[in-house]
Image (tube, rainbow, N blue to C red):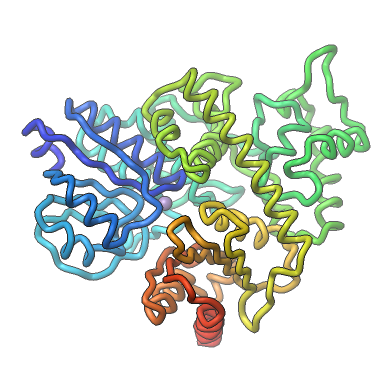
Length: 458
Ligand SMILES: [Mn+2]
């Protein structure tokens, strides 16, 4: 279908998700379409709803490609986008609707794991590769998308499922190298203290976001910070020094109340993108992902898209600035949430109603950090809400792998709970969300609390 339209010289419309995976997916599709000689326009949307689909329909595109979103909105497409051909490349929970003008590619339709096995960028990559074998050079972006969606759930934070195929494509093309080590951002590039400060997965209380505290911490651990005049990066350290850092960090995190799982997260598989310049954040797959994430969350997804399309120089400088202000913003929110007693513990969930105090694009990140650091006393999913600029309520729900193993599926909870409030919800078992009309408050949290209770009892 894509070929049919590009061959006919038509302008292709790409609509992707406004998160780092979505941006990577948009970049893959943009490059794919450009290589087919067609013009295109790509945007990243926070969500799909009747309004956004109606406005896309108004553009009268012959073909609209949705990536990293869309599977849950086939009914909306059927009603509001009847005269365009549609391709949906997604890995979120699909709704069952039959439509003729649509090609729907989703691992969940084939019994494959969409939450951990392949990302929106991955699904887009498989389409790109199918169209032209030369598109295997886009495989690193598939890896970035998978890391962006935190699909590194295999042994030692490695990729699993269909992502393994993308990984071997990238390795075969000599664009990727993997090794297991301490997992701080900027392994090759940054002074150690900064690398630790810049790491937010796992979030290290007192150290993440605080370079001065990291400096003090390293001095206390007895690590030499400089080689002559040059700051040492992690790759300059001996195995013994790395072990010393690891054990000091473990002590520190346990003392701060973090759980064993987040301590484990300190070590993992490093994905080095060999096609990228050394000493840049794009060289490390996770760092690339966080750069795109910051662009998306700070409302500049097109900046991320240009980087995925190959722009560097000025775009990189702007993206790095965006990343810096994004980090400062998160630090501020976490301090705020932890300082006050804004988190409410319900029977089965923790709830946070941030109203307008936390940017709705960042609330999901805050929820993940709070959940994974073990700052919360009990093991319950974390559900947070914030107001978006249109006055809708955006809900982000996060759970751990262990909770999913016990039968929790937040995607289903959000879908069901939102329905009763004329909202729309969905997502994965451990990360899901919903949009609700204004004024829906506590009752929604109560409904979610009840549904989660039903699931874990079942
Ligand atoms: Mn995704």
